[in-house]
Image (cartoon, rainbow, N blue to C red; front, side, top):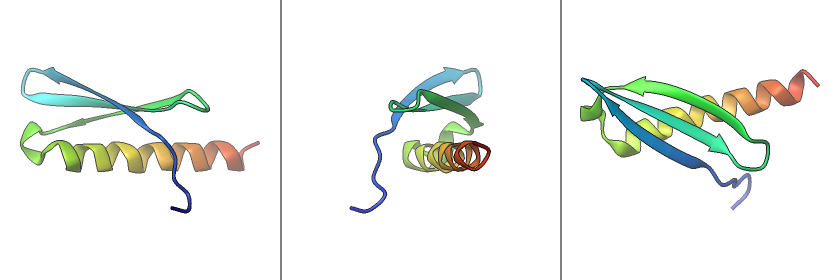
Length: 63
């Protein structure tokens, strides 16, 4: 699979929302999002992964 990278996810329920952290274990880059628990784990993971991908790309371009 081209472009595959491992991503670690962590979920924390905080009141009426869920904080999802996504970490790239190679660069140790971490991002977080806050979402509605009713969105489901898959949708929240996808949103966090999109943000992590964006940040990793941005960091590569600024070097």
